[in-house]
Amino acid sequence: MLTELKDPERLRGLLAENPPVTAMLHYTLFCRGPEPAEPFQLVLTDDPGDPSCVLVTGWSSFFYARETEKLDLALAYLDSPAYRELVEKALEDDPEGREHLLDCYRFAGLEERFCERLVKVGEPVHWTRCWVHYWGSPPPREPTVPLSPLSPEHAGLVEAHWEFGGHDEGSIAYIRRRIESGPTLAYYDEGGEPVAWCITHGSGSLGHVYTRRAYRRQGLALEITYGMVRAVLAGGWLPHAHIKQDNEPSLALARRA
Image (cartoon, rainbow, N blue to C red; front, side):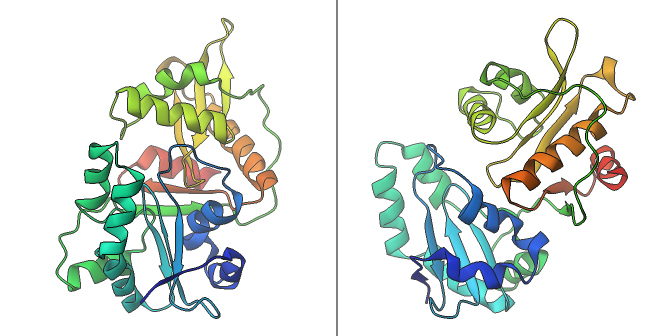
């Protein structure tokens, strides 16, 4: 049985056992500012005095445990009347949002061993397999090209090139919040338009790296990556990126960086 944890500081030891895997949880608990779009954030654990697992709920669920079987506790909570009541109360005016959270489990950055556990206990699973790349060394050099942050007015441009974007107002609003809330960097052309950029996801991971076709093969993505790694390190969390296993251009960029 999971219970609410009022003092997330007790989780630092558990999360420190595997920093790349727990980077999203660390950012969500200790580095992310208030997210106005989150309906709620609840932190639960098996033992508030000596936690061995943690579940953080919101639009996505983040989970980590020493023992794979502890995932069953998270599933039991997400299936409980208490969780349904929480969602229905928080989203009483948003039936689409309620359905989004209640029609299936929605985990972000879940280790493959936990996905395999879902299959073992008979849950239908659809996952996007990713590699986690992280910066585990001193800060990189400063970028060699002039870079500046994006502005909220660029949200539509960034969203239009987002593979997982819905290309609607909700999706654009998410990008706008990320531009307003987290570090961003872009290279601008002579007319003042961004032609290459990177932002962070709501989980703190680097993402949305994109260079317009006419400006590719100039090393801009690498320079922006270095700049973003420096910004994230200054913000106090581990620079990391979840990259689809079939996204060879992004994997090549991560390896090169």
